Amino acid sequence: MISTAKDEGFVVRAGGHSRIQILRLLRSADVMLNVHAETLLAHPVFDNPERQNLRIVERTVEELGFEHGAVQSRVFSAARNRGLALCPLVAGPYLRMAMIDQSNAPDSVLSAGRAPTGAIHVASEPLSEDVEYPKGFYLRVVDGQAWLRGYRCDDTHVWAPDHRLAFLSPGR
View 1 (cartoon, rainbow, N blue to C red):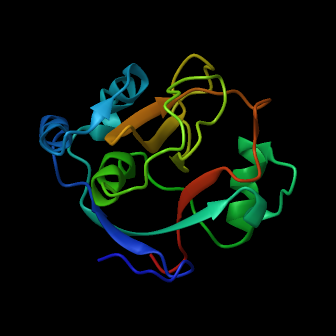
View 2: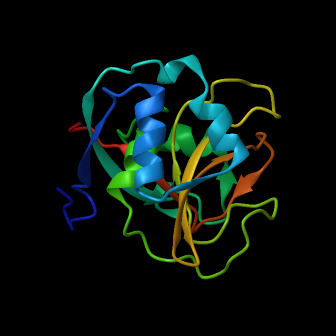
């Protein structure tokens, strides 16, 4: 299911489960959630989303043309200009389960007001412009524990050049 060629990405089957089923799948995979992920999972977009196959590719902020980093809106715009698309929000939990063998983060800091080391953010359209509402999901493994975490940021927060994001490839 997972290709090793970076540009090819890999396919994730997302959707087709109720919110309760998604939560059960995450629990059975021993995935931890933070309060922001729980908030996102409570959104109506998770009311029985349509099943779809998504071709996921990973890019760093630098690979998208920002050697000194950039804010989320510029990163997303650059990705679109390169033919990539944002993931539907529902991709987050399924991507977490598909990447359960993600490498352990180099540190155990869970929240520091910056993008955590070893995280892969699932690039998706924010559901709300309210800076207090979570903007999306990220995947991280801390001390051997897989996490699906929600994050908040505004458009003044600069993502570092090595910040990793998951997008939809053109051949989805």
